Image (tube, rainbow, N blue to C red; front, side, top):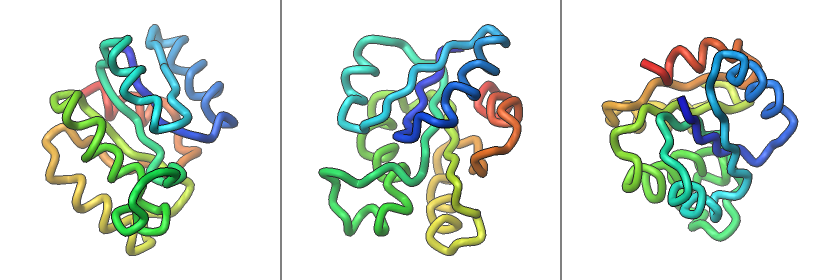
Length: 133
């Protein structure tokens, strides 16, 4: 499986990528959402994992809830139109108990390919299992 990972933080990615590589999967990280079009044009992805709290550089702040739901906005406006049938999940260091996170999770549930919200640091295999279904 070829997985698109939208996450500006590179600290966790090597660990995630290594676990998934050992299981014969490829991870392509895009750190800046503005590079998504290029990445999606160059590769065919099977699944998407998105950091919910991507920096909102160049995005309308009213749509990104002060940065807490930027990943949701980027998915709806930039990823979904090009990869509508690909399974995807969101993850973040923020807890689902925050109202803004819970609301984003509820909105994303309307997409048939949505596989859930995961807290950063959860076992990588759990996320992989969810997006590979």
